[in-house]
Amino acid sequence: MGRQVGDFPLEKLRDYRPALGNKPHDFDAFWTEQKNKLKNERSKVETDLREYPVPSIEVLDIVFSSWDDSPLNGILVKPKYMTECPVIVCFPGYTGSCGLPVDYLKWVSLGFAVYSFDVRGQGSSPDYGKYQNGSRIPGWMLLGIYDPENYYFTNVYRDILMQIKWIRSEDSPITPTKMGVMGSSQGGGLAT
Image 1 (cartoon, rainbow, N blue to C red):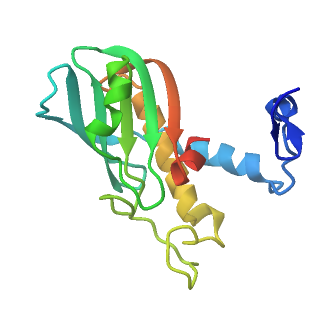
Image 2 (tube, rainbow, N blue to C red):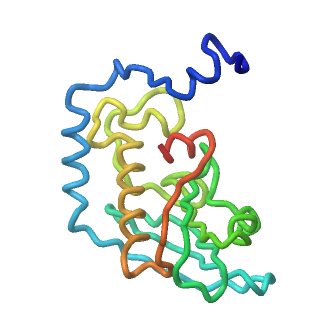
Image 3 (cartoon, one colour):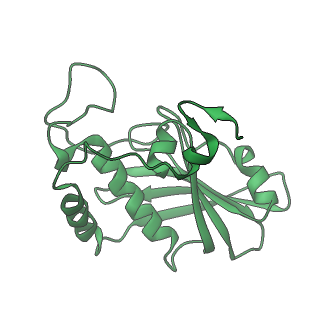
């Protein structure tokens, strides 16, 4: 008998898939449209090699100008001299930043490269989005919530789509052999 977690035994939890009853009827159409709008967009990206005291590691500071020209700050931490390897995209928690190179040394020592970008309006990145319908409660989560086209997290997911497109492009400083995502809190939500 397996360990009991919640109401189901562990064996049943592994296969459990809850129903998604709150998904709007036009959700898939909305995101298909958003992806189509971004198809021909090209990101402007500046990279700057940082001096770093660990000789086997290369660190690049990145300024990623997204679809609306919001400059999102980020880093790439990778094994030095590698041009191809598995890549992890790390998303920060709410109000967090892309972090420091030392945060990713364990992954790089295993042969992975790690990209991490500040989320617009968080960390050291500004947000050029215009939000007509906000909320009286301060914070990013409710900015423009009544207008899906101009909602804060719609903009954040557009940024992510553009970043992934760039990471997979020939313009990226590293060629991913495989890709994975990780994050906690807000970052865990963005990683899904």
